[in-house]
Image (cartoon, rainbow over all chains, first blue to last red; front, top):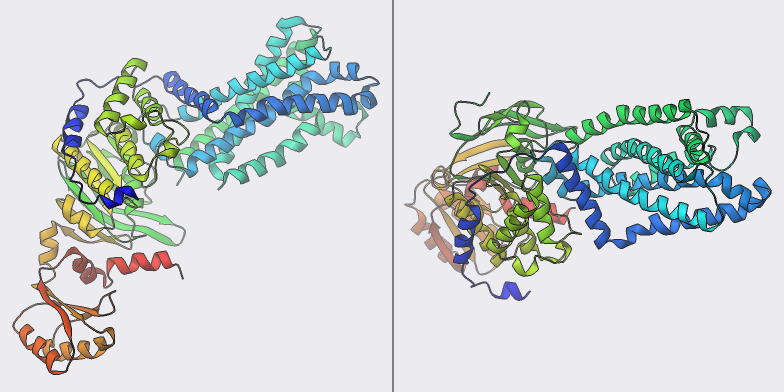
Length: 282
Length: 328
């Protein structure tokens, strides 16, 4: 309001002069590589953590809550003792945690679209997927933090990985690959659906059956055959099986290969679809 | 292959964009020379933004062709992108980050090294008088500051062509003047500017040539002066002391001036008419006085762009906007 009172302020001459020097660019830098431009978007995602620390809530509190709840509420009933159950659950709960986190990528993308920044980025002469790849790289950081918290908590509660640290590390890497690939489903939804909330709603509707009708919480052998046959082909089950193998030190090469194939399948289908919608977004 | 006619910054032929039933852009032909400020003038929903979004490669045309600086916007989109910048209608900065971080991010995306990006950001923040706000989150910026940051973000690499979509919408007069002076400075440094506006005054002040757009079509094109001349000798404006006299005044003026069309303006006590000749004007004033109608203003002016718009579309530009806002 103060500004409107000063309507007689003359057009600032110095803006013109300063602009003239700012506009004088002697050299134009070369176009950044795909990796470089993706990393810039990854940097943006990390900066956001600094300014919106609340978004770390789901990365820190949720995993702790889920691990404690399932271990102590259901562990005794499901596996006879909570410590036995934790030994079974931990690789699965790790997947559950990270897979739910992937949804935020689509949510964030949709939020960007509803603001103007999306337009700015799409008019830049850069490798087109970099904004999405970069956001996913930033998210990988969040997944890593969540994984460390879950594993740390598990160790604290008495969990011991039979395959040692190397097995755990490989399992987490496999999971990050899977999460990166699966995220393209949510980026696609982020581009198709109108509001961030609808992205959230649809994603959760897909994820709940996918994570619960899997081998995360219980062994599918106790399930009716029709359900067990779904659980067996559920991509989440495939991932969890491979991770259990790695963490327990008895992984079969075929299980790991299958998990990588499923990841590759997600990427091959949903990354091009996402880019199609990204290119044709109104 | 780049076109040979690079002296044209923008060239469109029968450009069409359809959204469902709505032909938002319905056969737009434009020829915009380099080295000018060119205005797309029109009311809300006329198709200005859709046109600019096609030219800046954000939307694919459904028909016709568009070339920007000689490059086809569909087939050579990447070449177009590396030569132009868009400042959209809505703030394009990341609100959670600071102004400085926004500029550094974009400078990095244009290929500057980390160090170079920082110094380029500082340079621009200084030039746009945003130094004090550089380390504040953009969400705390005023409208004018945001717009300046948006424009700064558009010229990290000096573009050959800058699209400005409604650059001063919603700004106070001081910020608007700043944006205008930025546009003039850009032009002086050799950047061609295409801007959209619904403010006739803005087009008149800034643009060398103007295309008037209504319902997805260009209905007139030329310099501000040419457009004004095209609508006749001048305009009679009559303002009455009492609004209830307007119908009778209209009747009298119609009778005396015979071959003119009288328009009721938004002001309930005002009337205007475009004149092809001015001989009977004095007579008209006398007739109003004889009828006992008190007149507070009776003036003969060169047509303004407002009237150009009225003449071309049959509706005053402002009235349309107001209707849109009332939303009945």
